[in-house]
Image: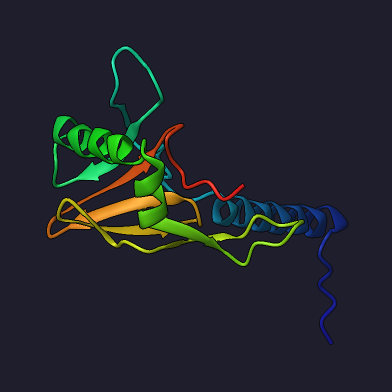
Length: 139
């Protein structure tokens, strides 16, 4: 028969350490490791409509802004907006969801992310487009 007893303070300390370790693991898993704020470049000076190139890859911010401004100019015409996308599933209480009708713009492949933001790609290059001219509006 084992007559060895562990003092209550030792058991409580071990339980406290275990609980602290679990809390640390939960905290680490809840926050994305190294989550950095996206790099955003304002493409208009002075600021007019807030056209931004976000996280350009394989292209300089200056070149990305040329593309963003061109897309903004294109979307300044109602005819072009209607050619680019439509809002599907609209009801009197719900505006509908945007669906691209045109998936290419000046050699860039277009797609919508999170429903309303443009993501543009071409081989080796990509960027997200934001600003007051963007995202797509189905209100």
